[in-house]
Amino acid sequence: MTLSEALTKIEEPSKDAIAKAINRWDNIAKPLKSLGLLESTIVKIAGIQKTPNVNIDKRCVAVMCADNGVVAQGVTQSPSEITAVVTENFAKGCTSVCIMAKSANADVIPIDIGVYRDVNVSGVINKKVMYGTNDMTQMPAMTREQAVKAIEVGINTVIELKEKGYKIIATGEMGIGNTTTSAAITSVLLSLPVEYVTGVGAGLTSDGLKRKINAIKKAIEVNQPNKNDPIDVLAKVGGLDIAGIVGLYIGGAVCNIPIMIDGVISAVGAIIALKLSERCKHYMIVSHVSKEPAGKLLLEELGFKPLLTCEMCLGEGTGAVAALPVIDMGLAVYNNTYTFEDAEIEKYEDLNKA
Image (cartoon, rainbow, N blue to C red):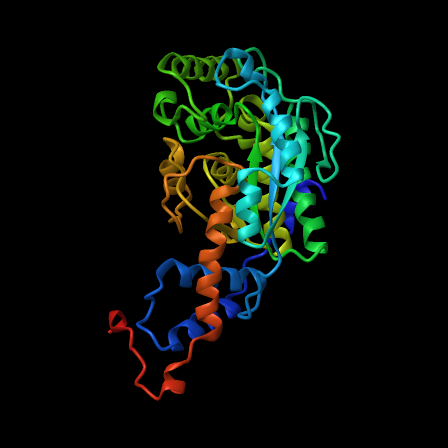
C-alpha cells in the first residue's frame, strides 16, 4: 500500500465500542476512574479494535534497524558496525528487548530498513531501502522518494503483521546515531534550540555532546528543512528507522491496531505521523517518558501522558514492551472483576457531573 492510499483509509475509532468500554469500567465494583490511565488505555484500545471485548493476546515489537551517515561526524561513542551486530542479535534473541519481550509474551521482529551492510541472519526481515543514510551535515540524509518508501515499509509491515494475527504492536529501533537525527527533527518541528533537545544518547563526553550539537546545527543550516513539510524534514535531517516507525503508526491506523510509542526516536516518528494525519493519534498508546532531554517535550507536543516513568533511554522498544504487563493487569481487572450488581452494593456516582 502506498502512503497516499493509506492516508485516505484512516477512519475514526468506534464511538460505540468506546462507550461500552467506559460503561463496563464504570460498573466494576471500585471507585470510578480509580485505575486512571489503565482504564483510558483499555477504552482507547476498544475504540481501535471496534469492540469492547479487547484482545491483545498476540503482540510484538517491530524493530526498525538502520544506519545514519552523520556518525562520520563523531556524534556517537560507538561505530556504525554496532547497528548490524545488534540487528543480528535481535534475531538470536539476546538483546535487552528480547529478554524483556519474552517476559511480556511478545515477539521481537527485527527489520533491516537501512543497515549499512547486508545482514544475512535468519529472522531478520530484509526491507532495506538504502545502505544507511547520507551524512546530513553534507547533504540531505535521503531523497524524498526514499523517505516515502521507508514510510511505506512501515505501513506494509503492519498489514503483514495483522495477517499473522498480531493485535498490538510496539515500536522499536536500532541505529547508531539516531538520537542525533531525532534531535534534529525535534528542533525543526518544535522550533526549539538544538541545545535544548539534544542529549548524550548512549554516552558522550562534554566535547562529544558539543560535536553532536554542532553537527545538528550544520545539518539544519545546510539542508534548510521546511518545518511545514514533515516529509521534507524527515528526508533532510532524519533517518530510515524513524521513517519506518512513521509508517507503523499510519499502518496501525489503517489496520485498526494499537501502536505503542517507545522513547524519543519513536515519539519523533509519532509527531511526523500526526502531521501527515491527525487521525493517527487515536491509534497510538504511550508507554513511557524517555530520560532524553526531548522525551517530555515530545509527549507534551503529542498531548499524551506516559504509563511509566522509569528514566529509561535504551531504545529497541524496551519502554513499550515494559508497559505491556501493566496494560495486561488493567485488562485483567476490566475482564474479571465483579460488578456493583454482582456484589449487591450501591454503585458509585460521578459527582463531578452534578
